[in-house]
Image (cartoon, rainbow over all chains, first blue to last red; front, side, top):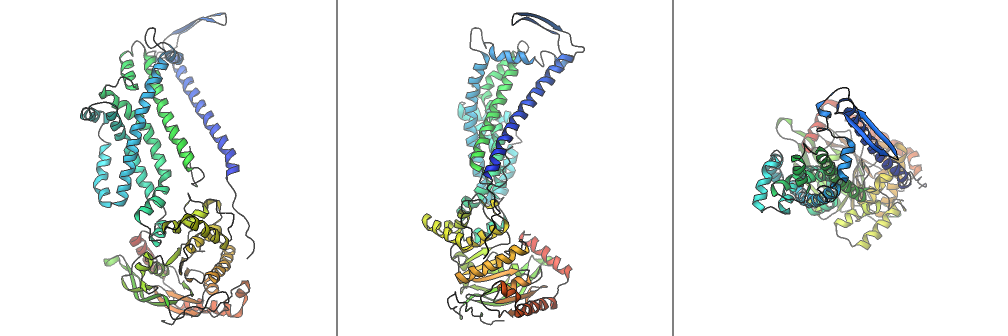
Length: 311
Length: 293
């Protein structure tokens, strides 16, 4: 036999460079969009917000500037849309007289909510995956239960969370259950799809080896489901933060972001920038969580799967 | 049609056990679907394949050659008739892991390295780790892919991937190899090279091979016998004995006898040329029944 030319190219070297450029591009993209949002925000205030003036000393220079917007839009007034710098300052200003800055208080609350979200995410993820594995092995269970799984998500979570809280006597457990209620669904749907994603011929191949159902699950179904599973887990991570916040409300938990939201909602008329600061922190918690799932996905899947879209 | 498999007196292979049939089918019939849409894919299939034989199934699409192969492998069950593999019902033979299967697509697991893809059947069958590693090392050598054991499937060309699939099918040393158009997706040059390689492997392993193909030259070049099939419903039209020298080499394709045999097979196929509309119907019925393309 003639020597075979090596057609295969190791992808590592060329891809490694591309990966760094790509992640750099992603960061640049994120910052550009953020800046664009801030510019549009302030532009709206410039054109239709409340009149404002800056006066003070910057680098020994006295500044006194007053701006009168040409029109007035309700959506751009200081109550609906506080100035970007006011929101930024809200993080630094003390939350209460002589107390620590609001940013620090919110960070503590965010950490608390994040922990609950993680617990609920793990519960929901395991439940979701467990259901998917069950459905894949039992058509009967799938046919009987999938409609209820779907129906569970049409019930407003706000309506059932008080029931869960009173049934479990409040506390972190009830929050975890509410969170799991929101997170199991995307995981079930994604995993179900993934567990069936392998090529029909791969199943025949396993049949030709007289493989057991368990071997098919561990050696074929689960590995081929991973890309689908992680896509679902990213959605679940984002949903779990919402679930944790909603779960905290009826449980009356004072240490999480829910209490901050309720609190600053009540004082919105006097300090709208505080609610905005809280909103920003909520989304930061969600972004961090989704980011962590993405990092885990990259660690676990990169180099093992051909098409891995880590966008 | 029930002739005993031709002997395979290749210099490098042990003397075949002529009397023993590896595959034996009697009156096999396969119908897809039920009621008015039912289509008969195979009818009256009596075939005996002896140990060490290389038998090709050839015919137009819709003649049921792949179905026959899948029946032998117990990937689908016959509507009537009996299939014995190594003297056992096909289902028993499958559970005993009597055969290795190679499809048209390599069907490799992306998340596994090449070596671990080859080891897959061994892992399922519970071979110890060091035994598996030793075996995959040997097979990588056999299919000339040494040094690729640590790569992932997508890093290899189509031809290389198909060689991995063949190595995987041989991993547990099955006495029967079922190949469903294994080189159908490859270009002509790669295909010819793969044919030579397959001949070499066959010579070294003394495996019995049942090989489905569309290609007349490929069937003649590889086989000890070519089973020509016709559609409407799928039947065995003729069996052509291939009396070429057993050492098949590049020169085999230039032999006078090789061209004669190619012509014989071609004429046998032409005599049973199908009418395309019923072929499409059959194909559609099969897809409906099996959910397979």
